Length: 371
Image (cartoon, rainbow, N blue to C red; front, side, top):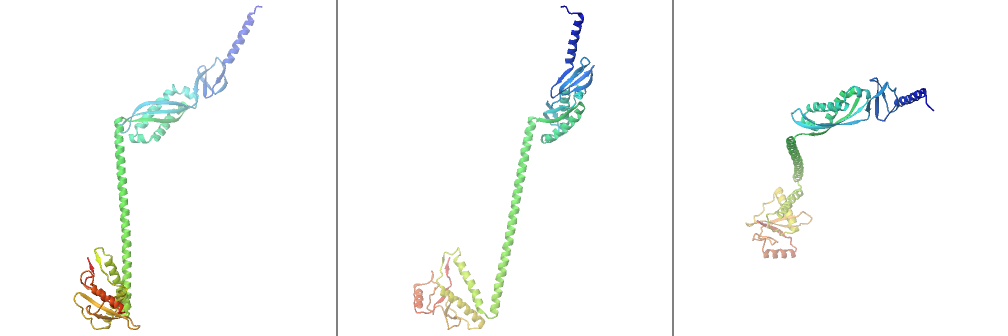
């Protein structure tokens, strides 16, 4: 059956209407925004999802990526404030916030951001010294981000980060910096060593000062004690108590014997006496004191080379009485000055005297030790 001309027209009209319908349906993927132009003029922005436009009159203008994007900044040379040349590269992160502004406010968005970042890197880093440049990267990144973000704000984009990746000074400058760093570290080490020695000397001096102070205090206390002891003995003697003098002299006597025995320059020390002889000598010292204070007759002189001999005998309950005799007239355990400390005859006489019950006496030779 032949189709009439009207039927063909209707069929063509239906096909055209279907074509227009499908042409007005636009699907926008996630992360993108499309701009719509009507007769070449921006009218609206299509967001992700299913959208409708008027075909023939409207068309898609720019497809803008709304996700955060990365832009590499190529290496460039920068002259610092102290005339040092360094090679610098970096990276920038940005995100489109307004698709219409990014599409119609600037031509070539990525190229514009790249050139803006590079020029601001030269501006910011050129106003700093090399040492400041190498040690303050965070400050440089912050200043770059602030400057570039303010400049790119009219374009509908947001600069999220601007980072300096590498700063490469010339090799000769790196070597100079290495020598400078080594010299600075050596200087610090010497300063620390000197400070340590100073502190050690100060502490040592303080220790010596404290020790000297305590030694002086100890000597002062000892001197006060000796003065007090001497005063007590003097008061006792003044009151007629001779025993205090005996105790004082005996103490000094025993201390002197101890020093003689412990002396390092004596090869032989001969001390031929026993405890009874020591007690007898102490009694003799007391008798001498009574003679001095009581006005007894002066003692007889002995032979040359001998000291006086004191024979000690108890008389009842009275204190020990002392008689003085010449050294040659009393048999005794005596040691005469004949070389190494007394003869065999003297020793035998002392033994016989001890067997007979007679109290021994002591004769001190002129030399009692041999150096």
